[in-house]
Length: 482
Ligand SMILES: Cc1cc2nc3c(=O)[nH]c(=O)nc-3n(C[C@H](O)[C@H](O)[C@H](O)COP(=O)(O)OP(=O)(O)OC[C@H]3O[C@@H](n4cnc5c(N)ncnc54)[C@H](O)[C@@H]3O)c2cc1C
Image (tube, rainbow, N blue to C red; front, side, top):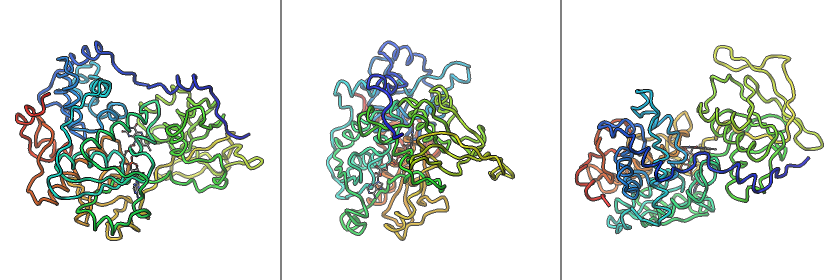
């Protein structure tokens, strides 16, 4: 039986409504008033972009959501998407001191969303007008995902001419094409891209570096290059039957939700997802929400070994996803040229290594298989394009973690291709750091000027979060106050 859409449009719209709805104004005021405005705010330390959380929450409590949005967006241009997708449980909210008092942490993500939604809904521009390009330097940003956007926005505000080259039709990277649809809609991601463009950044989509433009051309036309090319496709399973049409990369499956009407996404009635990271969890949960009667994860290790976050695991179980632990795929079973099942073998872990249990094979019926066993690193592409770049033994581009600078002095890196795959907020934070690294490289200034106020100053740099530069908090706070 071929795959088809399973649910009508209204059921799909309900299933893909946002899982964290926005706070109403009164709720936001009440929640903001719970904040203790800690002087050494651990929530700021926990944010890779160093957002001054207590300051923006205080502004919400004072009835100034636009001011709050300004505090957020000057530190993190992707503040609206981070408000929706950040694993706040393990970042800012996980660091909230209220947890130590056995109280609920402040809902920082939802407050951040409240402030950024407010300015988006009312068309309020809280960022400075596009600054004049005063430096005379030109920077190429390869990849229009969170890392590239974070870097480009910061560079533009530092007075450099920036051009983003993005291979896909739409910019935004995985924010536009990959994050679970019930967390982040592409419209929010694309609105953030427009915000970056409003700072004077040029965006060229449909341009693949290595195909449409050579690195030699970039090096001729630009003074520095930032690489924010992310990771590649999901790794292959390397089992017989993988070439069948109903075996898909989980990322391609998820991208369908972002690029066309939900009611046209083709899904199996019984869906097997191989892997147990956050991509696998997103895929299995979305298969269920698309109407799959059974959607199950196959993972070769134990429940305790799962790389997915606990809250994502709970969320998928809540959606009715099932989990087969200690099981590995051996072959995709076909009937009349179509997927009919997945042959599995029981596994056990011996001395840390997974091995199959002889004679324990069985077939789980399914009509679609999604591969989610980790994204491949872009090693071949990068080696082909930049033969002099050092790629470390994890398959990522080696660089100085404080500046993003690689062994080729005019090439900088950030985001998934430099960290091996983390979160949106890490990519934005690394893009920002690299922008300051590029600024210092181009201008030969000893330090790069801070763009955001901070009450924590150099401490943040020491922790590897936020900006590296020393902070003149009182001057900047006054200048930025709307
Ligand atoms: C399924 C899935 C769900 C996720 N969910 C979450 C979540 O809930 N919360 C969270 O914080 N993080 C999540 N992440 C992680 C997050 O999406 C990434 O960490 C983040 O997008 C990395 O940003 P990036 O800019 O480094 O890479 P990407 O977002 O991958 O962007 C890279 C960009 O570079 C472009 N590019 C690549 N090669 C070229 C080239 N040669 N020329 C021009 N352009 C090129 C690509 O087209 C792409 O647009 C998720 C990831 C996946 C896969």
